[in-house]
Figure 1 (cartoon, one colour):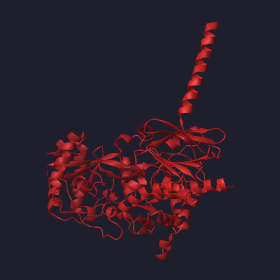
Figure 2 (cartoon, rainbow, N blue to C red):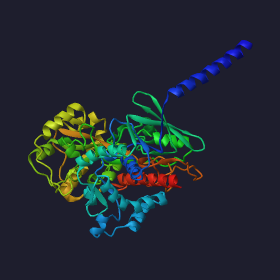
Figure 3 (cartoon, helix red, strand yellow):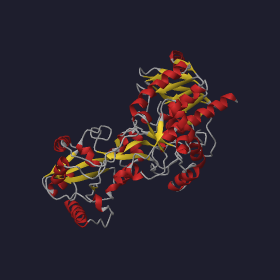
Figure 4 (cartoon, rainbow, N blue to C red):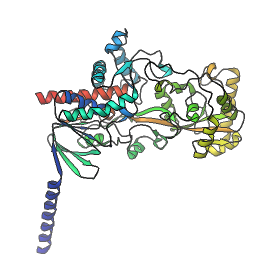
Length: 517
């Protein structure tokens, strides 16, 4: 017994001694603020701290700065900007607040929404100061060309990317540190924040003593486990967003007692066959045809929506999400041959997105000279399924032939009569029957740019507990935040990116105020 207790005490002492040695070896840094993530929210927070001459450390998990706002977003939402005022735009705070609140059936954080909207106009001036200028113009989506002018598009996408890379250098000139390939993994928190614990690419642990941290790490779309837990059709999603976003900020806040109760909100945005045939590449006729209101069938072989929803990115993706994350665009050989040799009076839904400010979009598609080669290649790779007959196509898709046959028969009849009695597609879009083999089915997946739920926060972007009390020293911004959306991304173009910039700015302003007090 004496030996046992002596050994137990000895082992405990050794463990404590080893722990002290590990902690002594741990790299240590000290700063006023730590920013986790260098997307729109993180870079915006950093810019405010830089202007206010507050030292900070910016942690970026990737080997280069930027997130979804840098690599994918084309603009931001705002109201009451000077550009809008110069154009006489009357759509303002009352319209936006009422519209978004009602759109989300009052499942919103009213104070946070209000603060975002009221700061959004001034954020346009800040973007100019950051070297990321935007111009107010029509929506990039055909379905919203007559909407109020609230969308502010980056004037040059390539220059935006280049300037984003210049901002960290500006921060470092002001005394900040920017650590790429370094990720936050936890925090040391007692009665307040003591430190952020990070790891670099070599696995070395870094303890950063600080009193404030801003988690701007973009939600959790890169965390497969979280995605599968929240979305039954997650395996079908095509992630065009920031795959570095693994939910670290959300997890840390939850461990600190933050209220994370909210319906899952998917940042669904368009559809595409695969990462190789997607709107970011723009190099396949297969992708072009998926961007048009042709015939769509779901995984039961039935038509499920008016296909002209393709012209509203968020609703298009929601329609796919609603039928299990995948559907099929079905065409016949005659349709492919027609597109190869003719111009078709249909607009590619992504045409406007890839026009720079001032460019005139094409309102027609074709001729598509490589369409047959593109379809043959996609058939070999599996993005397209081919059948000499409808029965063979249905069999290869594992769909009930009776449903496929019925759906196509009714659709062809609608084209003949120019009347779609079920889904009400316009006569101008009822163009191509599916009747002459071989037949082709393009596999379409619900595309996502991220996630839009995470942590409940107050108007200052501080995470709150169930009783509403804030967790001091910690801030959650951008796609980490609940409160702007009830169940899906609304058709207010650029609102997620606009909120990311503004919420990062809000959190930095709150920290500056607390430090000065």
